[in-house]
Length: 602
Ligand SMILES: Nc1ncnc2c1ncn2[C@@H]1O[C@H](COP(=O)(O)OP(=O)(O)O)[C@@H](O)[C@H]1O
Ligand SMILES: [Mg+2]
Image (cartoon, rainbow, N blue to C red; front, side, top):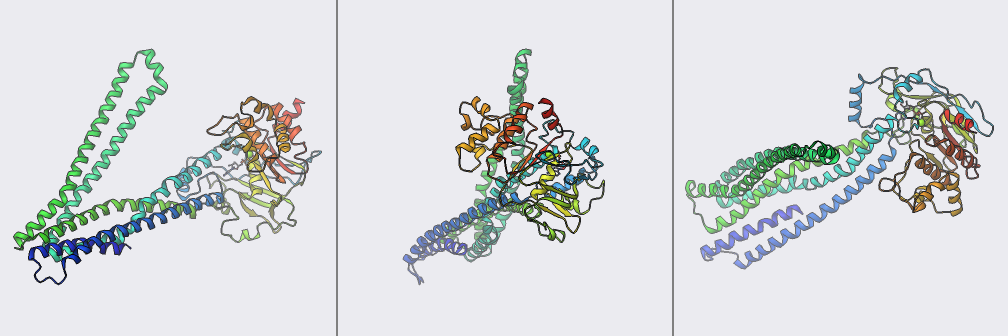
């Protein structure tokens, strides 16, 4: 297609040349009649337009396909990533390893689960014994946890780095591919066009054409320098604008009362004025430079032609006929356009390549969940449970980082936590199972291990980890979250509405009173754009979502932590002992304080 376009674009200058030649010589020695050249002229223009239209159609369609495929690929990949505390991309690892010296090194913790100990009357309770060094760990790692136990530093960092990265990939890097869509122009079309142009010019003007092309190449460095300089100026100008806007928003945002009280108006306005003057100065320089750049750009073809034609006329003693001048003028114009296009296109292509590399890195270098990672020897034994209905773990340890898991030497890693189950932990089907332990001892990790989010390391021949998923699994994360949706949709979460069940859920999760406070009831929008909910309300909506779901197994991580004693008690009585939970398997994580508080308040 592009080759065709190159050929088509040369039909016009050739036709111009021949027609003018025909006029000059009055048609002597002409084999082909002028109407043919007029037709060629017309065909050339039409063909160029058609081919370039077709080219853009194909390229843009391809671009849209590639972008949507990559977007989907990134989202799909994001679901398979192990969400551990660090970003998981090599760059982050490097950063982290640099940090090693500075951070407190956490030694391996053996949070050992006692085997099915201490059963409460209706519920079996698997108590997590505290490992030898976990108190030290708690002191450093989880000291930032508030009573609510909601925000661990690890989770915060994990979220921001990974979500930020994925956001960036989707928005910036995928868009940067658009800049590179014309890379085929740089590698094929432009070189071909330039080569044909030079051949044409050489045929028409002899070696003086080469002088012209040389002049053009040399002169093209000038706009290059100018644009580099103007880029710097632009950066400076932006910095000045930022400074001015910064001052204004600082004053208007928070300090305006101070300014008024202390009578600082004059001084502040002078300060802003000074910043504005600096900005204007930078802006003026930038504009002048743009002007120079435009002038130079327009001068280049003129200079080139002057040089070429002078060389042709004076040095080569050739005769400058109209056919030579006009046909070569068009070609010089195209040639210059191509050189310019090239200088613009190459940085864009590089930018696109960088974006593509980042996406490739993300797809290849993030650590995946065990079930998606290429299986290593030890993982071949994954989950050979004696009974597929069992929920539990036997003789296995779990790590957040597969690399760390491979070579855990105490004190060597910046953050290593290992969950060890020395005997067997089996959760009772159809009952409420409690996991109790101090913060940081690995309760959440135990749930994660069951869910397959942690790296599994079997410790014996009979090791297994099993969580049957046929009946569905509902997971209430420690950090409760709501979608940007109505409360009702947040609870239904895609399931069909069954009014009776829904009302029961609202009542059992003690949400009725909260809903009566909103004008729109359960149609109130929550989330980022909607009403802001309290931590307890969010936690109960998240709990309601899990209870409403028909999943057979409920993993509830610290549901009671964000609630006040009365609400917690009502949930423990109405919801956890209610009919909706009856018969389902609940694995409930609670901090040791909760049962105490609940029983004390009775
Ligand atoms: N997503 C994660 N990535 C890496 N390490 C984690 C992650 N979540 C928890 N940990 C580690 O696991 C340890 C136990 O945390 P956690 O299981 O959340 O305890 P608990 O739920 O009992 O408070 C912490 O010390 C922390 O370092
Ligand atoms: Mg936890």
